Image (cartoon, rainbow, N blue to C red; front, side, top):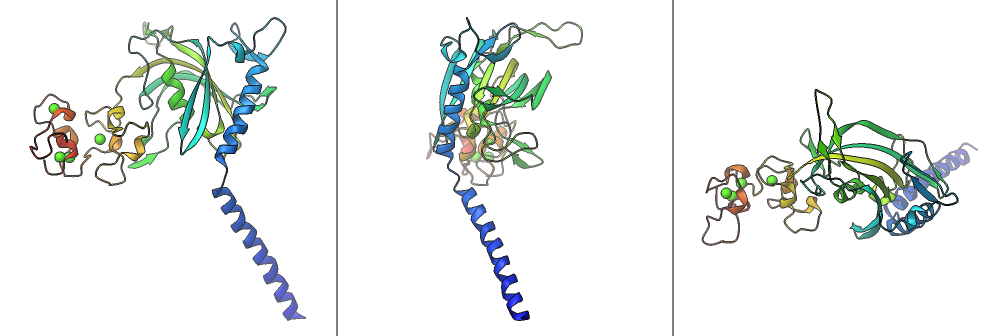
Length: 299
Ligand SMILES: [Ca+2]
Ligand SMILES: [Ca+2]
Ligand SMILES: [Ca+2]
Ligand SMILES: [Ca+2]
């Protein structure tokens, strides 16, 4: 009798463990491509069933005499993006592009923004706000170093989305910072360019997000590691992925690495001609096209 009980217990345990194992392996095999297609269908349906109410600055269910946002072809644009071999479509609505003479931020610049984030619950409905920032705040659109570790930074939908807008005019008087005519619009972000199949405290997995955004300003040529080379120029292979450029293979990507070739001399000091720009110094006659800051033989 006791023996049979023992066998039963073991049997139950192994089933539990097996199903745990199965769960984690099915998570690894998550079909991002299928989710991307599903998300795109949902976003398109949503765009066809809503219009943008300019007075209230909000998306509303389509009503008589209104134009679905999907058909506002002058203002609604899309960007095809490839991330980890999966194709995504990001939609963005440009209510106002912005007037800043600095032009558009790059995917790695820092931006000064206000926002309100909601989720698409279904094609007919948005959630309540899950995150709202009414006073503008600075964000870097790339990953950042936090306590020596690489932090994921903002969602990819933001990195790409903000590059379609410009900041405004700084009209600050007294102490309260104010900008006029900054970029203003809406980002429609598939889950794969947001939190993917993981959840946060306020957002379930596989959520398509909608952000009402105001871009007030950005830092031109944001330099993530202060080595006098703008982050965007440390994307050596120009694939818009800054994480796969690591010249000295020290697991710190160049845009966050203060000594890119690992020769012990800081990149900002590998500036033979002293013009403050380490990208135009080529001291090695054997490697005339390799700048000193990427050449271990020169230090
Ligand atoms: Ca660097
Ligand atoms: Ca160096
Ligand atoms: Ca130089
Ligand atoms: Ca060097």
